[in-house]
Image (tube, rainbow, N blue to C red):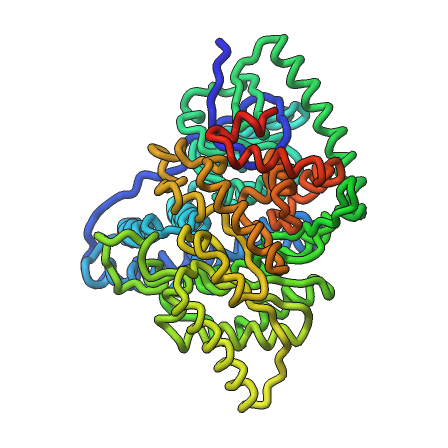
Length: 575
C-alpha cells in the first residue's frame, strides 16, 4: 500500500531506494543500588566507557582528516562536540554524586544525570542549542553500549551484498559518528522520526549534500524493512511503496536534480550580479572556524554570521578565556583570506547550561536574561569577548554583530563597552584592528524603531528566525503551533521591508541572515524590496545565486510592494 509521511525538508534532492530500518536505539538500563565499597569500581567502569567512546570518536575524526574530504568539516565539528560533551565537568560531577552519595549503579547514575542536563537543554530558546540535547543523549548512549557490549545499530544495518542497491536509512534518530556510513555512499538518503532544521542530522545532511527528511514522527514504525521509498528532500516528504507512475515521475526528478547540481556548480565563480547590473553579496553563516572551507568552496564572498556559541557550550559553567576566543576568531578570519567576517557576540544566557545553579523554571527563557542582556549583565565576560574579537580584527576584516537589542540604553552600553575594550587593549599594548559595529534586528521593537538603530550602527542584519517567532508569538520548535510560524505573514514582511528601506535611505548596509535568506522562493521578493546582502548556510548559496542571475530588480520593485501590501502575500508570491 502506498502512503506518504510528512516531515521537515532539510537537504535538497531526491533519493529512491530500499528502506533499511534502524530500530529505536534507546537501551533498557538496569536500576539497582550498590554497596558503598563498590562505588570506586562503578566509577572505573564509567571512566573506561568514556575513554573507549572518546578513542572511537577520535579515530573517526582522524579518518576524516586523512581522507582529505573538506566537505565533511561540519561532520568533523559535530564529532568534536561529542568529544567535548564526554569531558563535560557537570555531567561527570553529577554522575559521581549519584554513585557516591546515592549508591546508584553506573548505568543508572549516567541516565539520571542525563535527565537533569536534558531538562536544561529543553529550556533553551535558541533552536540550534536546544538540538544539542540529542548530541548529549547519543554520547551517553554510546557509553551505555560500551558497558553493555552492544554494537551500534547503524553499522550492523546493511546486509552484505545489498550495498550495490540504492538504500535509504529510516531511523528514530542518528548520531554523527553513525552517519559516517554515508561517506561510502552506502545510503542515498535518510529519514528520521525526530529533529528539526538545526538538528545534528540536518546539519550533517546539508554538509554531505544528500536528500533527507527529519521530524517524520513515526516513520521508523510505519515503514517496513526493504520497502521501496522515495525521499523528497525539497518538499520534506517520504513516499512509501510508490506506484510505478510515481516512481517514474520521481526518477525523472532525480535525474533533473543531478543535472541541476552540475549546472549550479558551474556558476560558483560567476559574480552574483542581476540582469540589470545590481551586484549582490552572498555570504555564509558558520558555526565553527573550520566552516570557512565549505563557505569558500561555494564562492561565498564573506561570512555574514559567525555564531560564537560553540565556545560557550558544554563547559559546566566555565567560560572561555580571551586567548581561547581570540584563537577561534583568528582562525575564522584567516580562513576567509581577506574576505569580511561578521562575528556575533554570544547569543546564550543565564537560562542556558552555562549556569547550572539558576533554576527559574517558571520563567520563559525566550523573554529572559539572554543574548546582549546577559552580556551586559556580565561585563567581565562581555569585555573578554570584545577584546578577543578586536584582536582577531588585526588579521583581516571583522564586523561585530550584537544580538537582541531593543533599547537605546542597551545601544549606549554596548558602545561604551566596545570603547572600554579598546582602552584595555591600549593599556596592555596589544595589537588590534578596526571593526564595524552592527545590530541584529530580531525583536519587533527594534524593527519598529529601526531609524534609531540606523543612527547608531554601521550596519544592520535582520535575523528573520527570531523576528518571526517574536512577532507571531510562535515557538517554531513546538510541533503543536509550528504550522503558524509563517515567514509570509503580512506583519513580518512589512517589518523586513521597512528595515531594508530605512537602511537604504540612510546609506547603511543591511543583510538578512535568517532562514529567509537561503530560501530560494523568497529571493526575488527580497531583491525587489532592495536587499543586496544575503547570508545563509553554504549549501544554499549556489541555488540563491542562480535566482539572482535570473532576476531584474527594476521589474521586481513594483511587484514586491504589491506583495507586502497584500493581506495574503503567499498568493502573489506563488504567481
